[in-house]
Image (tube, rainbow, N blue to C red; front, side, top):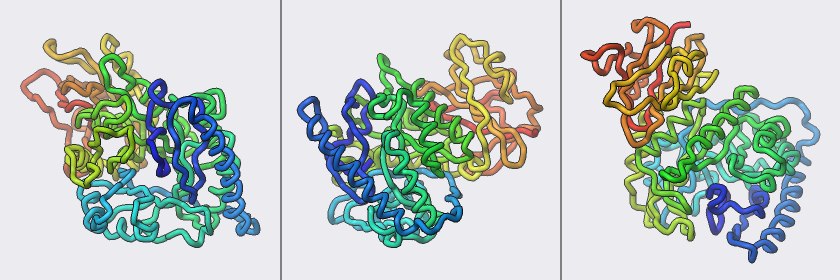
Length: 455
């Protein structure tokens, strides 16, 4: 996600991702990616040669000075749920202190650099002043020149690398870990709609497995932008991508994050608040410990003709700013509990499924609905709390309708608590329709609710 002439990396397969997209620029090198058809292939191939040469140089520059320090280094530990603002673009005359206050007011907890007109050190200072964390763009110079401080979570090293350069990235990660043991060496991976040439291996599963084993990251992260069109609904593929990240993060004992879409670009429609909510809560159901909005500012590229990210190009707020503030406020309240949970499985109840059978391995015995309501369509994330309790998140898989299921837990109602998304506190289970038979739980479109049960 380096600064570039076009946001090529954010276009799904079949809608802009081309087979000749090569590895990303190394940290500290800004190269404008040229997008297009066959006319650009030679230029991109030239870029590849430059990129790979510079990556090797940057790796050597990072590692040579630490070759004599083989002792194991401490690791980055995430201390709060990450709600990330990416591509924060402001007018040239912007008051950056006020702008960062605006990001914090929308309940973001993390800002990704680079930001035009804002040095890495300034980024860390502004984030710290407004109670947020920063991940700065890592230049290829000395690690000693990179900012530190409590508000600095770490350094952006690379975006969407091919598996062929994982060994070099491993050296860079190890070098930063030795020099700054409490900081994150951050790398973002391709989505599962990237092709084998981009991945450098035959399958996406192999790509992620190699990344974890060879690079040994402290956080897994990928970007995936589902299509919300009646004739091209790709949400199930988004879920499969999240499942891949979930499995590998649990196995490695590290958190995972993901980028999701908040702007109309390429083939994507402008997401509604319900569609944004669906993406966020779906990620959480799969155990994500962070989500990142793509994008905060509106890039000035041909792929964003409509504008309408969280901020317009002139810096004014769009409706997405207010939507993000509402959604993020609830996620921040869930955050402390989410950080205590380990995912143990995710289950889908589709229309026509036997819910009791689909939910057999969950704390929910069954789900039913009133005859006047649409068929069941739910996503259920199951977790184990650090204190040993069970946890379950019940999500409305529909983004166009609310849901009002009758839910039967496998524990007595007085043994079930909910995390209140207004206070973050544990509260007794509430029946949303006490005059109806059974326990009723109301879910907004795309919303999830989190419950805790005794062991």
